[in-house]
Image 1: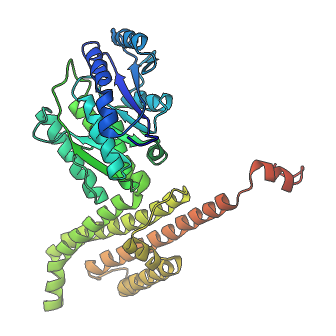
Image 2: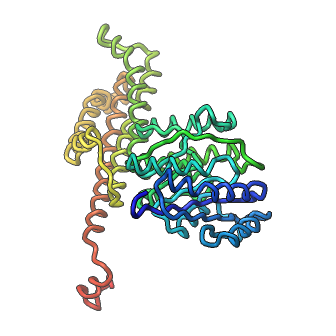
Image 3: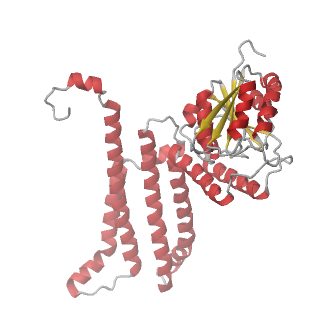
Length: 416
């Protein structure tokens, strides 16, 4: 081992696990020498967190604390706070350079912390996950399918892949917590951590591990917690890269628009007219184009709001180019052009109505003009909202601290 190897904290969150907690703690204690050798770590501390248990979980853990006071500590919640809250408290209480956790239900082998710690060292990783999706896994089929779904969704939204987003056994560098927090307090803690680590650009490695059938009744509810996992992933994307979801919706709308508009466009170019039945396609294209422009505007504003927070993140080349193309001046020009084009399209109808109180204007002109006016309104709203964000950014960057404000402002100031 190194002269000053990092210390490791192992957190075991437990809620009514009296059937398994004793065996889990005993196995973890026995695994410490192997973890230290394989993982190249120094001191190992075990933090057991009884998350409002109403059975003998805390009592059994307390017996181990009495026998191993230098190695094991017990944290007891009077009421249930949640899986994530228990791990967070364990991380706070423990002082390890490397932080880890495993479930108390006996599904994971504590010796595997050795390979996880080694992977953190060897690959300079911020987070090392135990991948439970291999052939040695005894994971129930429903949870396996759900994990594949979550992994696909997160990979699709982030352009990076993690096979087991909800792994309950992992090692994290303490420094990485600044990029990961805050995290949920419930069972969605693990997928939220995975999502935030990926989107924040932290280095994640996965190491295949065995997974056994749990002891006792599972606390996980497939449907309820599945929706929580999905929400955790979407929340992470919305928080750290909000433009991505809106740009995805924009791309879908544009593709659908092109597919529906192709046939009427080809017909018009060939015959110079439109058939009456095409009004339905026009209405659908109007809806899709309006949605696309709204989603694009939302993507730009959401990205501005993210940078208002001051959190570091790089903007992709294409999105940065798009934001430059949709600057305030160009949006104003687009709005003016849209209004002018709309008036040109419907002016014959307006003139006819003013003279005869009747309109024979073709419906296609009205629909396209309506979209032009709506586009102009969206451009003006986008300009206004982006201006508000810039004003707030300027204010936050130049705001006086309370101490300096007291010095620089007179006592009678209405701002005091």
